[in-house]
Image 1 (cartoon, rainbow, N blue to C red):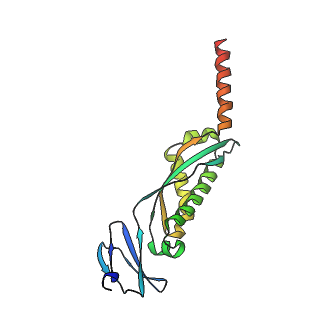
Image 2: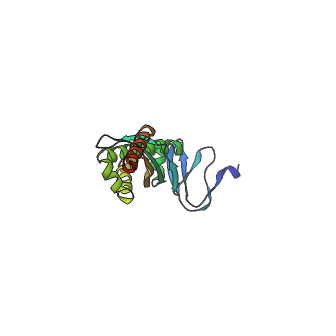
Image 3: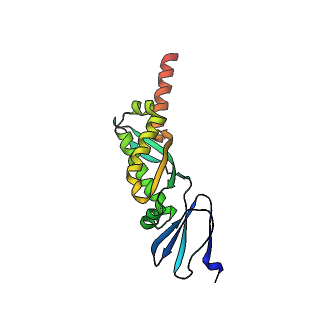
Length: 176
């Protein structure tokens, strides 16, 4: 009985004491703590930085060229109570919301630029635009996206073949 009333809070972790399904109080300090067993339960939430690799997605540029964007995200929980109330404190649900927000931000950012502008904006400019746009959708869940970066921005396979064929024909013309 006494052991079930004791819990430990670790570094980068927050404990929410839940009484009858409602968050009663939050424990942020590390160490041993106690709660009333059977009436209260403890939900632990990791509040450190987490990495989520988003599946590659197809996006269209302003000049109607198709590209494949492969993103990753570094995110964390900023409001554990809101995170628990909206997503049940489940990391998988948070990642679903993050994936949708980053996909929409990436699609909107890239669709407003031509392919040449995207190539010029690679790096911090594109990353900052996508990160800022993603955070506008995700704050309602008690989350923050610290970095939403495109790790690969490529042409679809059918476009690659056409580009390679054009390069080969140009080189053959130069050689002739």
